[in-house]
Image (cartoon, rainbow, N blue to C red; front, side, top):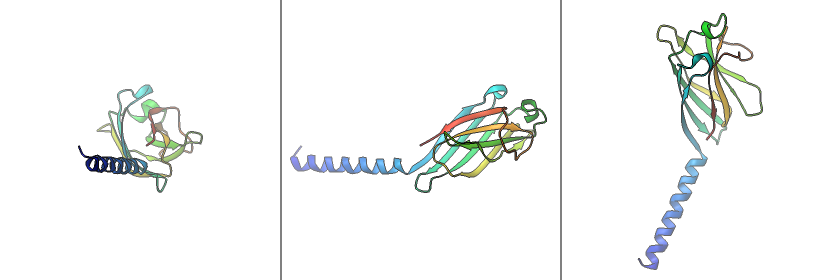
Length: 145
């Protein structure tokens, strides 16, 4: 290989590395398959998180299957609620899963979170809009690019 060809190859490799680094720095969609926990070990939770580091926002989609009835996990339970928090902050309610008791499934689509790295959990709750999460954790996941 000639010196000119080697320089071109090196330049192209440097360009490719820079392009890949730029794409990684912009975030992207993360996918998680989470097994249920505690009394909901049979639950399967699929999460996607579309991270935008430029805007410090993440759009999340959660689809859960094989959910036990919420009243089985939390006395008088009626809903499954999604929570997020930064590593050193309080839990913030994102929203409730749209729960289908006949299908034993639920989903929360296109919810926005003002974080790019955070803890996420799904809990069984007595109501769809509680102020703090219960201890009836269905699934949890650390989300980060």
